[in-house]
Image 1 (tube, rainbow, N blue to C red):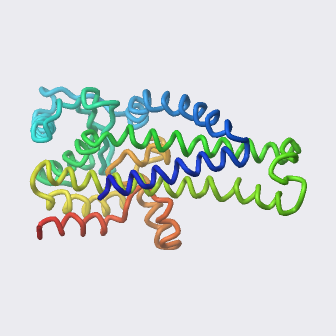
Image 2 (spheres, rainbow, N blue to C red):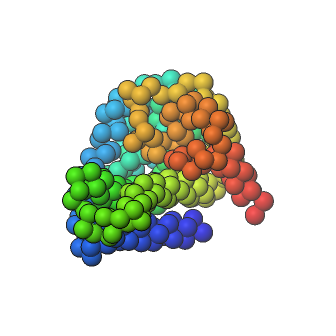
Image 3 (cartoon, one colour):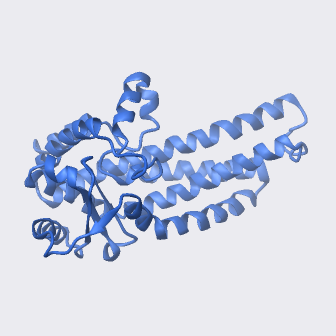
Length: 295
């Protein structure tokens, strides 16, 4: 079901890309901007893992240095029928974890010192299973594809805005009259907004999918459910500083590392802010995991 939702949202995002490209720049517009966005985001895809590790000040640890952590990651990888990922430790009190890597053979699992203090071994195993599930589900590749299309739409909107300001697009789409101008402005404003909403929705869908896959890898959804409840409180009390995590990397973590700010915003703005969240509500994730026990 999660794959069907992801695929459907990707189709909608693709339609937005083609539609705004054709409307603003003609039939070739979407192709040109798609290629531009693809180059930018593929470079990001290639290096984003290293960027995230460096930003978090993560340090690779050997089996000799961290035997229990290595054993846990190795065991989960074996259950998932995947190669053993490299293991990194982040010296940070904020409880969190993320996975990255262009493929299962290039995978990395990173955990903070804070999450190790907060969770017991069974709960940490559930978190590691969630991260291994992201690798198994190729979520980094999926989110890069989404970023390519959303980036192309954003560039189109920026160029259209630039064209309107300097009068370069008055000859297209009725730009010389009020109706054409209003239509153009709506395209410039609303379509990138819709693309952002879809991008965040896909990110939330992939989190649900990783929860489900991770629970099935270890044949028990309860450790992850218990871990998520603890992490919600832990990140709210101790959010990761902006110097070690930012909005661009937030989707990589099991819970939003800027969770304290996000929690406050969600209480104020409710469902509207939820549309622009990289992660589903913790209570929704926990509920779905606990429902798995019933089947």
